[in-house]
Length: 112
Image 1: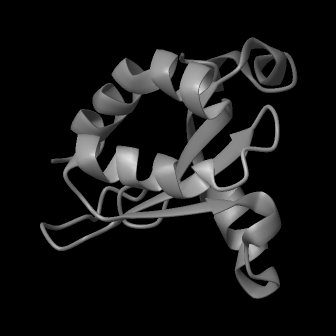
Image 2 (image 1 turned 90 degrees about the vertical axis):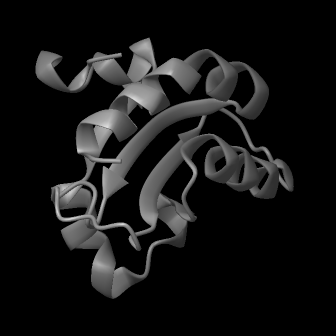
């Protein structure tokens, strides 16, 4: 699976992610975002929720792994290590954005 395939799969999952897991936005970072992923690469995903989901975070991780056929490293902005946060936020590629979030970003990022 390459970067393009991953983006397609995530966009197809958007209704489920928003309804069942309260996902507000999803962004890729790491090797898939840089188009450097290989068959052993995990998928690094930065997620933001519209409300607190608690333990369902674990269910979301499992759901993504099952549907993307890869190990997923799922993190929130709040959970990013301070020494990595700036680089990740600079390089993240947002794929799924709520309409609310799109009002604050350039239109080309609002490709939902």
